[in-house]
Length: 269
Image (tube, rainbow, N blue to C red; front, side, top):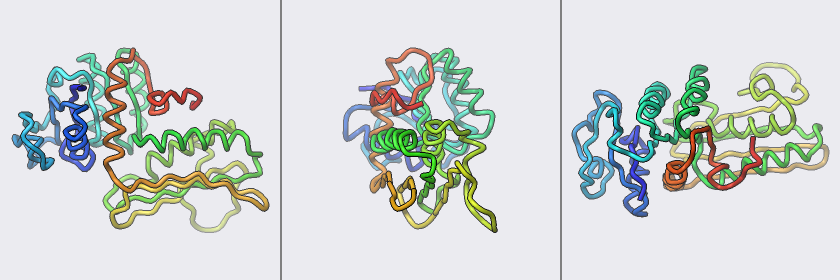
């Protein structure tokens, strides 16, 4: 059983991880961190998740020793992720970051922290998406450049960032496989008039209802199309993936990792 500090413990993913940890007996939450001033502060995280009492009260800030955790799991907000990186680095505790929507400062912070601790960045912790990324990389490298690449993603109406971190990661895999710039050659959303640029990777986002997560990568050539898709129907898959990643990361040396490393898919850039 992996001892973990759970950051964003009272959010959708935090609660799902608590429940999955109890059901699988694979994760012991030793620190539960919510936002400062959270209405759940002081309550047992097990009760918050609708489970038995776990003897761990929700707190509004990260304890310096992270509750003597072996690893931290972060599904909070971008600003809290930056704080978590600092605390984990000081405490020499590896961290799995599933939070998305980060600003420009994030990459520099991750690069600095990964010199001292293991850091796993996972905009999507499902096993299926990790494999889908590898399939996208293979298709982008094997198909001729005449095949245009378009990505569509759909999530529930409460998701704040668009496009999703997963869609950006899929675009990144495709772009690098073709020798393109993931930033300059990715277009998020289309409006107005203008022809499609050669080599452009488009991303379209939908936000509606309670959609857990759907991603489709289309490779469209003359007379044929290839599609790589993934649909999540239950949030528990992300929780189980995060628990698996945390257990794996707790034994790794300092460095930057992805879900591909967890599954042994080492060909993904």
